[in-house]
Length: 154
Image 1 (cartoon, rainbow, N blue to C red):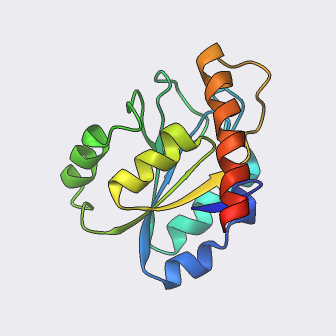
Image 2: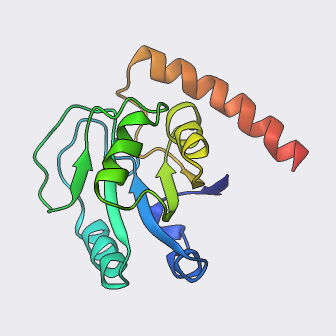
Image 3: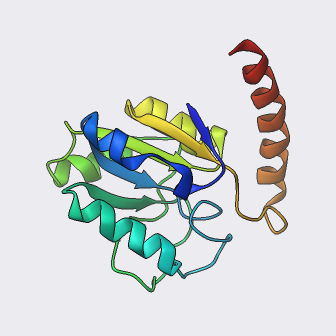
């Protein structure tokens, strides 16, 4: 698991050179605040840049379906960390054999999901934790403990 402050700190060119073809982004608190429906112009530019390099960009979110301001394929209600829905989606797209990167803000959903999927995982800092479910807040508490332990081990 790689740690970054946000999606813009990731070295996508290096990942593409290593053969990664699929980039699966969490939405809430990774690309924008929880329950928001817009994608920033900076993120749109990033997605366009990635697509121009012949890689696939998808949003995979446990959140409810919503209409976005940018045309990107999104798999809502994904049930992460379970992988069945995403595996079926990628198989339907004939992309199930490609190398994948999962980018998200939560260890217990996004990162575990990525590991189960066999993907390279990148955890980013959440954009805004002020308005989250109580369970998410509890999981973030345990994440902080886990990250402190991992930093001492690595």
